[in-house]
Length: 493
Image (cartoon, rainbow, N blue to C red; front, top):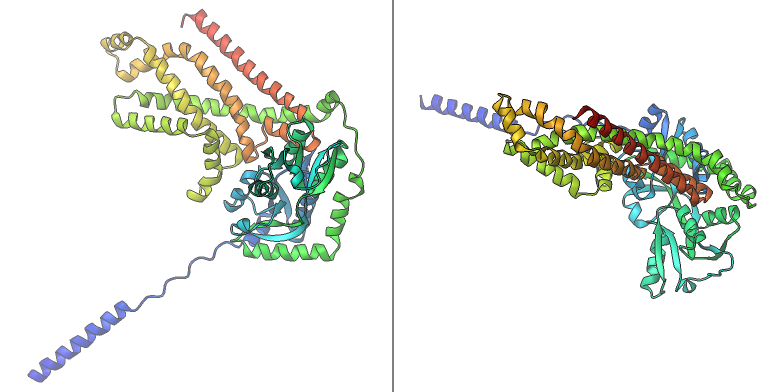
């Protein structure tokens, strides 16, 4: 009996230990799904999305509204060797790297200097080397870094040129003023208009402008040649390898040499007398300004309508008898009015794809940011107008048996509309001018179009047409408001 009990206990113990061992043995985890290959994605879409800053002739700029330049032609050759076509996305230089890391395009091919800091963020394929030069107007001679002392120096923002001049200042060269501009073309316009004395810029760009406008001259070299490269997301290693092979093929075929001769050679060698202001405006500027005005009107009217609707909802929540609704409305207004509209626009366009996977196009992002921002201000306009109505109106309506909601709809709100018109028109006028901020996400509204023209043709006087365009929009809104006020007065509202 004892032996049988002992045998049974040993058997049960063995089964238990075997079960525990099986339970503790790690189960094989299913393999994670393979990430989408960048090269396959590009070839499936049939396009290579290329970001450029189109204010850097002859490397990349707009001519008749289309991107042209050395970098543009190189991008087309690379895309052709991948079996796809190049799709160009014009971006402001300050946000161009953020757009690449958030997946809005596949590569940046825009004369980007290869620096250790940038190599921490993205991969590069070097395709050229550029030196920095001094460019002044004729009659000046600034040949060395020491001769920069006492002068106003123009550079493009966030470039090697800016960092080099800042280092000079730290070493004791007393530059009178360092003036960073968003694009190379603004640098040349500043020197031509007397706002700066000298530009530190890449040599091909200096040559382009000095050949196009003989009032500019290159007087010295600032830095030894530095590498520039094609920027690709670090996660897209297969695309980087394919582009590297394509670039080597372009070099072997002599195509890179041909492009260099084309863009830095004879056809740029003669200065061209620019056309007069009115001829240039009629043939080049006005078609682009009118096209940009259409985008500005879409943004103004679309965000204005959405802002009014959302603003009314927020205002009603702001004066609601429910404390939770009041708190939410107050937080919304505080947040949207307490942060810059430009920051909100950049957050929606660049940060949302990374944080929440929400990717909006430039028009949708612009409308969203403008509408949300306008609603915060319009909500306070509505609230002030509603609270300006005598409280006896609400009491009388309630005494007649109306609910609070019905009294608001039938008695209070109709009386507020007449009082709303002047401040609401002011807000819409300000909104029409705020639309110019969408240029930072490369949405071609009116100011963006004139900025591109001023840069490409070095004609800053075309900004006058943007001023005329905004003035027309504001005057039209004012006239519409006055007509509406007269109609309400005639009806006795």
